[in-house]
Amino acid sequence: MSNRFTIQLPKLGESIHSATVVQWMKKVGDSVALDEALLEVSTDKVNSEIPSPVAGVLEEILAEVNQEVEVGQALAIVRTGATPTLADEPKREIVKPDQEEAASASDLLSPAVLNLLRQENIPLTALDKIKGTGGGGRITRKDVEAYKETLQQSSTLSSDATVSRVKITGLRKQIADNMMRAYTEIPHAALITDIDVTALLQEISKLKKQGLKITITPFVIKAMAKAIVDYPLLNASVEDDHMVIKHAVNVGVAVGIEHGVIVPVVRHAERKTLSQIAEDVALLATRAREGQLQNEDVKEGTITLTNFGMTGIRSGLPIIRYPECAILGIGAIIKKPVVIEDEIVIRSIIEMTVSFDHRLLDGIYGCGFVSKVKELLENPPLLLEGLNAS
Image (cartoon, rainbow, N blue to C red; front, top):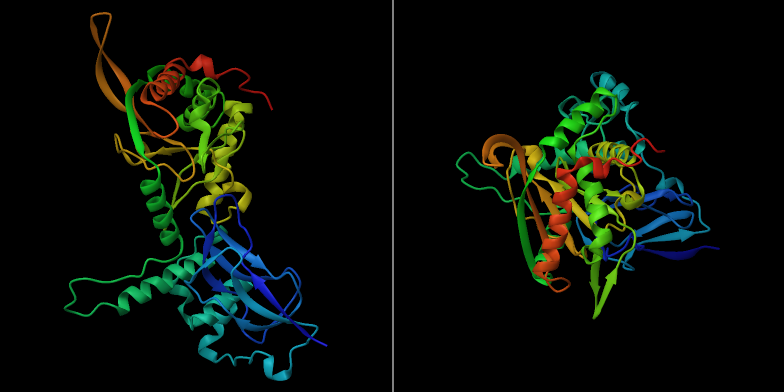
């Protein structure tokens, strides 16, 4: 006896209400094991594989690739208590002599990548045209998707075309929707100040000579966490007519990836030393660029840091990540002449911007937070307590 089980999009995290179908790992008629990955979906935070909560045969697909679905919406129907018939078995392909080299290369591919290649009708002979970004040069699903997008863009152009039209989908669509919601629902205000990081750079140089791999980013995260102790409204959000003040300082760090930006979270930054924060930042950035982030890595952020100075940009006005209350941006380090005690000296300066939700705090309160972060960064010994603690 068999039953039909409807699989729905589960809740993927705080403030996530929808996701976009990236790919199906099974096709109609395929057998599905309990907890086997059924499809992949994308949010503005991370890509996630959705496992099947039951074993059976995939009877019907209800959400197409690139379709946006809401949490709780039906994705597929699995027939339980049934086994696939011979008609359901996938046909075996005959490998021709000129395909042998490509077929041997497929041994290095994951089942998910091979499945995507079949779905998109991309032959194994095209593998040499796909640049692998995984470990050891392995081809990942994102590499195949990028290759497919390149083919689609090429097909939309003619020799005399002056424009091309590419549908906004996947991660880019999720980012666009989230940014639009943040910008229209949150009344933004911004404060900007210069910070003298000359002493901080000298401290970083000393720590690197001692073998600690560290950049300016962990110092900024630590300064943000310490400043929030005195200015907790920067770590709040709005829910209906309530102000929700978070006690854990979970700092999201914007990381640029091939098709956009993703924001993994350094959790409980208020409890961690600089070395612990530095380790977290390095690990999360590596996972983000290799497409290895898990849902836990991007959940429950309370305030965000974006370092556009890494690209040489001096200043910017970042948009707050919904539903957070504030985002801090730092620009490139610039050598500037500065007057100190009536003498002109050359100092290393960064421009720092804080965008905040004007519903929750006023400008004078925001100025206090900015001034506190500035004080801490200009006096790095205030951030070094317990540096080597584990």
